[in-house]
Length: 258
Image 1 (cartoon, rainbow, N blue to C red):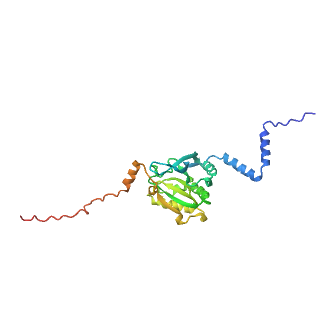
Image 2 (cartoon, rainbow, N blue to C red):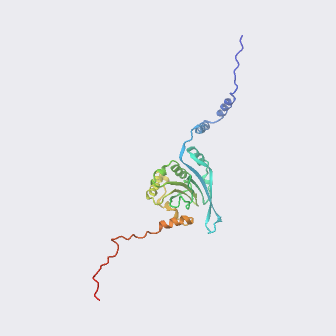
Image 3 (cartoon, rainbow, N blue to C red):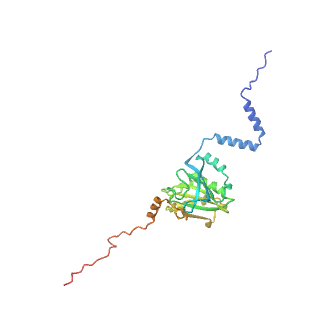
């Protein structure tokens, strides 16, 4: 009588353990685990631009020589260059834990969330005051409009989106959208229209809860001397050009007799 063939199980212990682990999970946990494994296996979906996250903590104890508050600006984490990287950052950032007068920004590479930055001095921003209960949800939505190039697509062709920010105040979140050229009225109007079209009806702010402002019009704006000279030259009224038509008419009469 021939011997019964031996069943080889070498290398199958991991599979057996995984099956046991799956059996211990609830159906909901198994679905979540499958979703996470699927997302990990997906090819990264690149964003059109590279983005950076900044944290701004203002301190009343740290003052510059002119008495103004200084901002302690720090870049957080790795550059965001894919949709997956954005969601990893967004899902792991507890917006509700940001403290009073602190801010977080999502800005394109090459731009800093500073009014006086060389690439921002001609720009401006829309500010939306929203309840803290709705702040995190609307912040995610505005970031998606930025990452997905929706905001960029509505701007004037000679303008650029710089980034978006969220600041915490006593009873509200201030969500800001920065662009590079405040002189482009088409951009100013289009940014507001884009946000209003994409906000849920119940979260659309009332007119007195949003406003637009050029960076240079803020009380705390102070450009470096070399950039201030450029701003001054642009704001100086032009001298009227004297034309033939505007010159005084001089009538030449006959010389008087002496």
